[in-house]
Image (tube, rainbow, N blue to C red):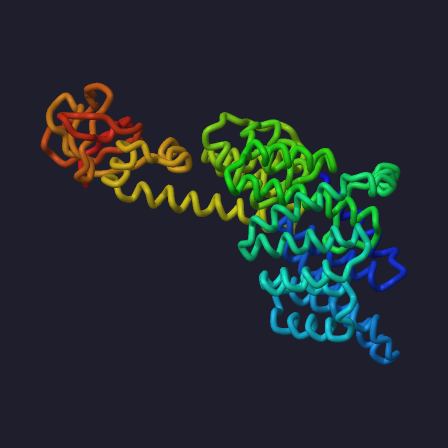
Amino acid sequence: MATDYEIKTMQAQAASANDFSTQVSAHLNLGDLRTTRNETELAHQEYTTALAAAQRERKEMREDAQAAEYAIATIFAGIAEAKLGHQERAFELLEEAIRYNAEDPHLWNDYSSGMGAMHLARRAASAARNAVALESSPLELALDQYSLAISLDEAGDNAEAMKLLESVIASLKSSKFNLLRRDVARHESFETYSTVRTDVAAYLTVLLRSQIQLANMYEQRGDIAQARKAFEDALKTRTDDPTALGALARLSNSTEAYAQAFDANPFSSDLIDDYKTYVRTANVHTERTSTGAQMRRAIEQITRGEDVAAKRTLEGLNQKFPNNDAIRSLASDIASHGASAAEFLKDLRATLTLLAQEKVTPEQRAQLDRTTLTGTAIFDAMPFESGTIDGVPFRFSEAMVFKGTFAAKTPLRLTYRILGATEWNGASALLLEPIRVEAAR
């Protein structure tokens, strides 16, 4: 999986880092990547590690009277607190950091990132504007403009955000970045980061994320052709980007496109939700054994009501990824589907209404197919063909004769399966498959 490779790369960077900024950035990036994979507990651990490193650095820099370095450590601590959901403490740290060096565009960009993590879009945009105004480096300016565009989009200023993103992409593709593009190709770099430490990583990250964000905005305004082109451009920047692959799968409704997206990141919530919608109408039976294929197979099995098989598939995945929320969520889907399907059969009149209106879900249909029911039947006449079961009209597909001495208009105990709904005497009725008839007890 692409995300597996990125995690290994970032873990190696964290382990070999010789300076504070590289180390704490690696843990913040790992936390963000774990979040995209629905590994909440592991993401929390990474953010906590980053926070501990930042707090140690703050203490040392304060004791050494290193104001600039203290501000950097404090801004990182604020970002980590924001990602951990500690908004009040994060706000205090971010405000403290920026007071130490309000002329540093890097600090303003980090401040914007922290405010964005707390969904304070207006503050994030204001900070990003400060970074843009102070920046002189073309690459750093592109990063600051990207941060501003993200904040503006979240604040609802979509038109300005789109213009900024288009400008950033055009700038990064211009001749002034030819040398850096050659470095990207020479190093075969493809991993992207939330917090970047090198020019190569910064270039690749801001170009790819600008392309994806712009594509998302095209899609949101209904310009699907433009969105598709922008997502395809993103894949030219990085051929296995999980977000772009997932978006193109959604736009194309293609089984192969979904396979590629799941192989890049099998645990994306958006991708899983999109695939649930897709398999309700597509006849898909995944046979491959990759992690992405197993996730797709589990979703397909759940949709078809194959709860036992789906449980086995998810148990195998859980052994390899024991801290994954997406796997847990699918497992809870099985439990809830079983409960809702069982509830559906408790009220036969409601069951008949759903069947007659063709509103039965795949899970409910699967429950019908495997459930045998018993109720009190009163037949209209002999041979037995129609009547009521627990007060609800029913009929068989043909008249039946049962062994034993039974009479019409007399309560009898009928064991049966529900095949569907039918019309009988001008009204809806359950279509039943009889299994046996006994005298009422």
